[in-house]
Length: 243
Image 1 (cartoon, rainbow, N blue to C red):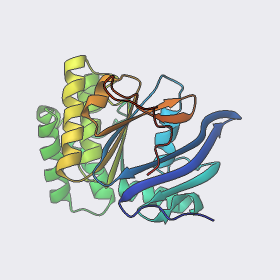
Image 2 (cartoon, rainbow, N blue to C red):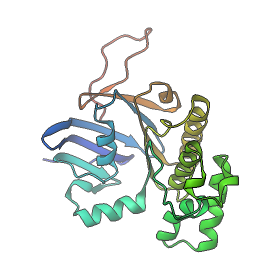
Image 3 (cartoon, rainbow, N blue to C red):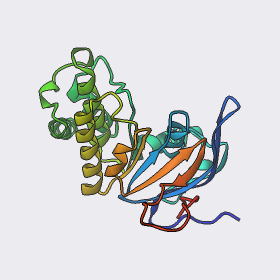
């Protein structure tokens, strides 16, 4: 019998299994993420981090298991309803910016707001505010081809945050940035999540960004474990991340 997810978990997964063309990516992952929590998922390349974020964001259907968002059983939704859920409630930042080349930076950031029905003036005001917070306000009128890679990535982060979605999934968002820029962008992501009560799930193969998180989990070959305990702590490492 299926158990209901905890009331304070905005995301809740149990026994998620996902394969790509017969190759296992997730092998029974269970976890719960609370509203407003900043969760880091670390692991080497190929450990299943991107697949996990794809499932949590409703972009990828799970092969087995349960996935819930705010009490909604995502695993039972049709592809069309999953897509609507994703567009309305999830923001995403990848390791590549994937901006619309024909649009300016301001238009790219405003786009998800406009698609959601926000008025043009309000959408553009929000876009300008987030471009300023990401230190790319001077790029507002430029198109992606006119920008450097680090500027495009900052604009992609602004686009994910501007609608203030309940959940932001960030898949190695600092990958194209130098260390100082990477740390600044990750601080802005974590700060925005906490100040606006957004839930942030950050996947990275670099353990450093995990310092911005409230909690860190590790994926190893599609299996999820808790972060290793500090030397002063005793007891074995937890193997279940579900609440």
